[in-house]
Image 1 (cartoon, helix red, strand yellow):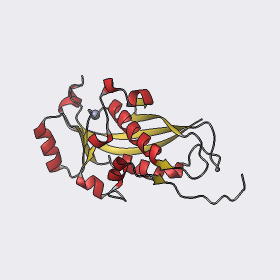
Image 2 (spheres, rainbow, N blue to C red; image 1 turned 120 degrees about the vertical axis):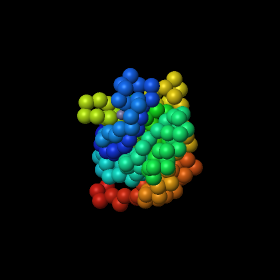
Image 3 (tube, rainbow, N blue to C red; image 1 turned 90 degrees about the vertical axis):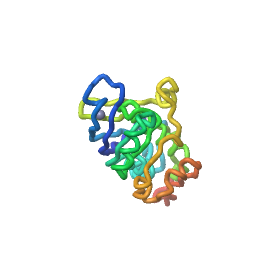
Image 4 (cartoon, rainbow, N blue to C red; image 1 turned 60 degrees about the vertical axis):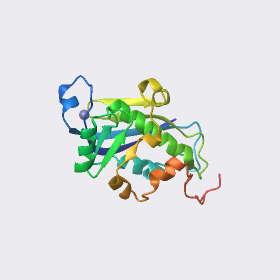
Length: 198
Ligand SMILES: [Zn+2]
């Protein structure tokens, strides 16, 4: 069974080397929608794949970090990168270009890492990340599956190569959130007192 939760953020970018002249040479923004699809073959004590409420924790925090940012490929012109950092407090350096395809892969890698570190406490089954859909516009989206996310032919994405600006980190409820993710610190879900014996 699949469940799906939708997240939203607004962000600016340039997509270098793309065919559309407007996209490759001008900073512009999108209202992104990110769909996170989780899969499991059994249900938890609440008879859910995974409580939607639990996805409002670290998963939401990491996606929300992209809101009101400028995202740039770390291979971009050093002057563009320098000015992006100078004139925007919220920036994110990415090891790949900020296309919808790469956002879908990036969020897959990020959320997959979060789920692997999550200690589930309510009898959840084999919950895994099925795919991530990144909508760049109302009419265009990219969907990344596991094979895409870790496919080196599409560019390597390692967590340590995604760099969040100081301001982005400071606005997290836990400013150490990303350091903890990099260090592999377990994310323990709250205990659940069962009201009906199962
Ligand atoms: Zn764009």
